[in-house]
Amino acid sequence: RVLFRSNCYQLTSINIPNSVTSIGNYAFSGCSGLTSVTIPNKVTSIGSYAFRGCSGLTSITIPDNITTINQGLFSGCSGLTSIDIPDGVTSIGQYAFSGCSGLTSITIPNGVTSIGQYAFQYCSGLTSIDIPDGVTSIGQYAFQSCSNLNTLNFNAINCNDFNYSNHPFKDCPVLSVINIGENVKKIPGYFAYNLNTLTSITIPNSVTSIGQYAF
Image (cartoon, rainbow, N blue to C red; front, top):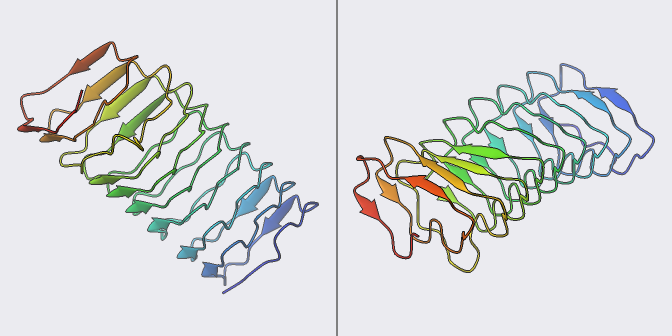
Protein backbone atom coordinates (compact mmCIF):
# COMPACT_ATOMS: atom_id res chain seq x y z
CA ARG A 1 0.00 0.00 0.00
CA VAL A 2 1.32 3.47 -0.92
CA LEU A 3 0.15 6.82 0.46
CA PHE A 4 1.73 9.74 -1.36
CA ARG A 5 1.81 13.27 -0.05
CA SER A 6 -1.08 15.37 -1.34
CA ASN A 7 -0.92 18.97 -2.61
CA CYS A 8 2.37 18.51 -4.48
CA TYR A 9 1.57 21.38 -6.84
CA GLN A 10 4.75 21.14 -8.93
CA LEU A 11 4.45 17.42 -9.62
CA THR A 12 3.75 16.99 -13.36
CA SER A 13 4.00 13.23 -13.91
CA ILE A 14 4.55 10.03 -11.98
CA ASN A 15 5.07 6.37 -12.77
CA ILE A 16 3.78 4.08 -10.05
CA PRO A 17 5.79 0.82 -9.89
CA ASN A 18 4.19 -2.50 -10.81
CA SER A 19 4.58 -3.73 -7.24
CA VAL A 20 1.85 -1.36 -6.02
CA THR A 21 -1.57 -2.94 -5.46
CA SER A 22 -3.35 -0.18 -3.52
CA ILE A 23 -3.41 3.64 -3.59
CA GLY A 24 -4.60 5.33 -0.41
CA ASN A 25 -7.13 8.06 0.28
CA TYR A 26 -6.16 11.58 -0.91
CA ALA A 27 -2.89 10.20 -2.34
CA PHE A 28 -2.60 12.78 -5.14
CA SER A 29 -5.28 15.18 -3.96
CA GLY A 30 -4.58 18.77 -4.97
CA CYS A 31 -1.70 17.89 -7.31
CA SER A 32 -2.96 20.41 -9.84
CA GLY A 33 0.18 20.30 -11.98
CA LEU A 34 -0.07 16.55 -12.60
CA THR A 35 -0.69 16.01 -16.30
CA SER A 36 -0.18 12.28 -16.59
CA VAL A 37 -0.12 9.23 -14.35
CA THR A 38 0.28 5.54 -15.07
CA ILE A 39 -1.53 3.19 -12.71
CA PRO A 40 -0.28 -0.42 -12.81
CA ASN A 41 -2.73 -3.19 -13.66
CA LYS A 42 -2.08 -4.86 -10.30
CA VAL A 43 -3.80 -2.02 -8.45
CA THR A 44 -7.09 -3.32 -7.05
CA SER A 45 -8.05 -0.37 -4.85
CA ILE A 46 -7.87 3.41 -5.27
CA GLY A 47 -8.91 5.34 -2.20
CA SER A 48 -11.44 8.13 -1.82
CA TYR A 49 -10.46 11.55 -3.24
CA ALA A 50 -7.14 10.10 -4.45
CA PHE A 51 -7.06 12.42 -7.49
CA ARG A 52 -9.33 15.21 -6.25
CA GLY A 53 -8.45 18.60 -7.70
CA CYS A 54 -5.91 17.25 -10.20
CA SER A 55 -7.10 19.82 -12.70
CA GLY A 56 -4.11 19.31 -15.01
CA LEU A 57 -4.98 15.68 -15.78
CA THR A 58 -6.41 15.28 -19.27
CA SER A 59 -6.72 11.50 -19.28
CA ILE A 60 -6.15 8.55 -17.00
CA THR A 61 -6.53 4.79 -17.35
CA ILE A 62 -8.24 2.95 -14.52
CA PRO A 63 -6.93 -0.62 -14.06
CA ASP A 64 -9.24 -3.48 -14.99
CA ASN A 65 -9.15 -4.88 -11.45
CA ILE A 66 -10.96 -1.88 -9.98
CA THR A 67 -14.57 -2.68 -9.04
CA THR A 68 -15.54 0.52 -7.23
CA ILE A 69 -15.02 4.16 -8.20
CA ASN A 70 -14.65 5.51 -4.69
CA GLN A 71 -16.05 8.69 -3.21
CA GLY A 72 -14.71 11.87 -4.79
CA LEU A 73 -12.02 9.97 -6.68
CA PHE A 74 -11.81 12.41 -9.61
CA SER A 75 -13.79 15.34 -8.21
CA GLY A 76 -12.55 18.67 -9.49
CA CYS A 77 -10.50 17.13 -12.31
CA SER A 78 -11.71 19.80 -14.71
CA GLY A 79 -9.09 19.00 -17.36
CA LEU A 80 -10.29 15.44 -17.94
CA THR A 81 -11.86 15.16 -21.38
CA SER A 82 -12.48 11.41 -21.37
CA ILE A 83 -12.12 8.44 -19.08
CA ASP A 84 -12.68 4.71 -19.51
CA ILE A 85 -14.40 3.00 -16.60
CA PRO A 86 -13.50 -0.73 -16.53
CA ASP A 87 -16.25 -3.25 -17.22
CA GLY A 88 -15.76 -4.79 -13.77
CA VAL A 89 -16.90 -1.66 -11.93
CA THR A 90 -20.19 -2.18 -10.08
CA SER A 91 -20.60 1.11 -8.22
CA ILE A 92 -19.75 4.78 -8.72
CA GLY A 93 -19.38 6.61 -5.42
CA GLN A 94 -20.69 9.99 -4.39
CA TYR A 95 -18.90 13.00 -5.85
CA ALA A 96 -16.79 10.60 -7.96
CA PHE A 97 -16.68 12.90 -11.02
CA SER A 98 -18.19 16.04 -9.52
CA GLY A 99 -16.85 19.18 -11.20
CA CYS A 100 -15.26 17.33 -14.14
CA SER A 101 -16.40 20.09 -16.46
CA GLY A 102 -14.13 19.02 -19.31
CA LEU A 103 -15.72 15.60 -19.72
CA THR A 104 -17.59 15.48 -23.02
CA SER A 105 -18.52 11.80 -22.85
CA ILE A 106 -18.42 8.92 -20.42
CA THR A 107 -19.55 5.32 -20.66
CA ILE A 108 -21.06 3.75 -17.56
CA PRO A 109 -20.43 -0.04 -17.75
CA ASN A 110 -23.31 -2.49 -17.80
CA GLY A 111 -22.21 -4.00 -14.50
CA VAL A 112 -22.82 -0.79 -12.53
CA THR A 113 -25.74 -1.11 -10.11
CA SER A 114 -25.47 2.15 -8.17
CA ILE A 115 -24.55 5.75 -8.97
CA GLY A 116 -23.89 7.81 -5.86
CA GLN A 117 -25.19 11.23 -4.93
CA TYR A 118 -23.53 14.16 -6.70
CA ALA A 119 -21.49 11.66 -8.76
CA PHE A 120 -21.56 13.75 -11.97
CA GLN A 121 -22.62 17.10 -10.55
CA TYR A 122 -21.40 20.11 -12.57
CA CYS A 123 -20.17 17.99 -15.47
CA SER A 124 -21.11 20.78 -17.85
CA GLY A 125 -19.40 19.22 -20.88
CA LEU A 126 -21.70 16.19 -21.00
CA THR A 127 -24.37 16.36 -23.70
CA SER A 128 -25.78 12.84 -23.31
CA ILE A 129 -25.65 10.04 -20.78
CA ASP A 130 -26.57 6.34 -20.91
CA ILE A 131 -27.89 4.69 -17.75
CA PRO A 132 -27.27 0.92 -18.15
CA ASP A 133 -29.84 -1.76 -17.46
CA GLY A 134 -28.41 -3.03 -14.15
CA VAL A 135 -28.63 0.30 -12.30
CA THR A 136 -31.05 0.06 -9.39
CA SER A 137 -30.07 3.22 -7.52
CA ILE A 138 -29.25 6.78 -8.62
CA GLY A 139 -28.39 9.11 -5.76
CA GLN A 140 -29.65 12.61 -5.11
CA TYR A 141 -28.34 15.34 -7.41
CA ALA A 142 -26.23 12.74 -9.27
CA PHE A 143 -26.32 14.81 -12.49
CA GLN A 144 -27.22 18.18 -11.02
CA SER A 145 -26.24 21.25 -13.04
CA CYS A 146 -25.05 19.29 -16.06
CA SER A 147 -25.89 22.43 -17.98
CA ASN A 148 -25.43 21.01 -21.51
CA LEU A 149 -27.04 17.62 -20.92
CA ASN A 150 -29.58 17.26 -23.71
CA THR A 151 -30.30 13.53 -24.00
CA LEU A 152 -30.86 10.83 -21.40
CA ASN A 153 -30.82 7.21 -22.58
CA PHE A 154 -32.45 5.36 -19.70
CA ASN A 155 -32.07 1.57 -19.82
CA ALA A 156 -32.32 0.70 -16.11
CA ILE A 157 -34.75 -2.20 -15.88
CA ASN A 158 -35.82 -1.73 -12.27
CA CYS A 159 -34.51 1.50 -10.80
CA ASN A 160 -35.59 2.79 -7.39
CA ASP A 161 -37.82 5.85 -7.18
CA PHE A 162 -36.26 9.31 -7.30
CA ASN A 163 -36.94 12.07 -4.79
CA TYR A 164 -38.82 15.21 -5.76
CA SER A 165 -36.68 17.52 -3.58
CA ASN A 166 -33.26 16.23 -4.60
CA HIS A 167 -33.82 14.93 -8.11
CA PRO A 168 -30.80 13.37 -9.91
CA PHE A 169 -31.31 15.67 -12.91
CA LYS A 170 -32.06 18.88 -11.05
CA ASP A 171 -30.97 22.08 -12.82
CA CYS A 172 -30.33 20.48 -16.22
CA PRO A 173 -31.77 23.36 -18.27
CA VAL A 174 -31.54 21.82 -21.77
CA LEU A 175 -32.53 18.21 -21.06
CA SER A 176 -35.18 17.71 -23.72
CA VAL A 177 -35.04 14.08 -24.90
CA ILE A 178 -35.42 10.90 -22.85
CA ASN A 179 -35.10 7.56 -24.59
CA ILE A 180 -36.39 4.67 -22.48
CA GLY A 181 -34.87 1.27 -23.32
CA GLU A 182 -37.00 -1.56 -24.65
CA ASN A 183 -36.33 -3.77 -21.59
CA VAL A 184 -37.24 -1.21 -18.93
CA LYS A 185 -39.95 -2.55 -16.61
CA LYS A 186 -40.34 0.30 -14.16
CA ILE A 187 -40.33 4.06 -14.64
CA PRO A 188 -39.32 5.41 -11.23
CA GLY A 189 -41.45 7.80 -9.25
CA TYR A 190 -40.58 11.46 -9.91
CA PHE A 191 -38.67 10.29 -12.98
CA ALA A 192 -39.16 13.49 -14.98
CA TYR A 193 -40.36 15.65 -12.13
CA ASN A 194 -40.03 19.36 -12.96
CA LEU A 195 -38.11 18.65 -16.17
CA ASN A 196 -40.10 21.27 -18.02
CA THR A 197 -37.69 21.35 -20.97
CA LEU A 198 -38.68 17.83 -22.10
CA THR A 199 -40.01 17.68 -25.64
CA SER A 200 -39.83 13.96 -26.39
CA ILE A 201 -40.25 10.68 -24.50
CA THR A 202 -41.32 7.21 -25.65
CA ILE A 203 -42.54 4.52 -23.26
CA PRO A 204 -41.87 0.96 -24.53
CA ASN A 205 -44.24 -1.99 -24.20
CA SER A 206 -41.93 -3.63 -21.65
CA VAL A 207 -42.93 -1.10 -18.97
CA THR A 208 -45.31 -2.56 -16.36
CA SER A 209 -45.09 0.14 -13.70
CA ILE A 210 -45.03 3.96 -13.75
CA GLY A 211 -44.21 5.56 -10.41
CA GLN A 212 -45.97 8.43 -8.69
CA TYR A 213 -45.46 11.91 -10.15
CA ALA A 214 -43.27 10.32 -12.86
CA PHE A 215 -44.03 13.07 -15.37
